[in-house]
Length: 451
Image (cartoon, rainbow, N blue to C red; front, top):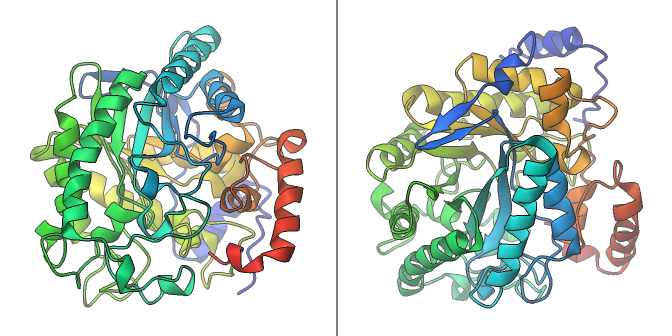
């Protein structure tokens, strides 16, 4: 099917299309519930709006933040979101997605202390409260490019993904390497706490190393095969981070609950479910993370942005044309998250991916909270386009339709080109020059932008 163009002139038209497709998209009549406080553990957030992790590809060579990093997060802090869930920050050099991915080490620690202080001060000055800052600790795994050249470190061979990123048996990481990462996640938590972050996220989503392990059904050894083995690194990484948790510092996770691939190449499916989600294991995992490991909140997402982009973030224009309407992806995401929330109601759950709905994303978010599908929502691409979206909702009741993300995919192009990333449409003066550089590179190196 051709790319769907978002042409809906009213919420009634959106609802009618969803009904035609047999979908249940939640919409509220107004956004008041998003202004209400939300408590997770010993932390109370002033509203239910947050910034989702979106890599900016703008670090300095040593992994410390650049002027573009400061600009982006300060603008987001001024925008009023209660939570800023920072982009993926690598825990090891070999696990960086590029030379422009942020890297927190003892050597770069002081630069992060300055960044978090500046971001919190900006929020306090603009809104009277500092945003809650969560550092996302990550290993890129299959998507490692520490020298801007693919250097995949994989959990197992995946024939479909290897169409986009070549790998062979020599790329499979050993159990000893994975065992060593458990301690690295503990070290990342300690550094995050020293750097001034309020929490650390042990990231397991979007096809990166921990997420790939969750579907390593065919891997041998202590990190593959059984459910217990496939979730071992995530759980032990969380346990290592928990050593540093206290009343002011939290451990959490961003968890992918469905990858978009059939068994045995995706999490959130069963041998008999095909591409239809089977959330039995994701529900079990979230329950165990809450009841056994003591996580009080989590963010849930789906898909692999490199390969099943339409699952992760439905779009108008992208690298391929999915065989489903974007509303199907929205429904899969929010109803899947709702299934987990209803199964583990004690866990505070942030949802993901409302941006495709543009000016109706706020009513969609409010509806999801009202219906008990989630407790709050993280906005990713929307924050690139309009970092003030939260204050617009809080102060005016609705998001500004003239500033919304158009899901054109240009920010994703910039990330893959290792260029400072933001909204080429809404922040044209800053990011169009980088986009023009990307277009020139693409002409001479087209193979580098396949996946």
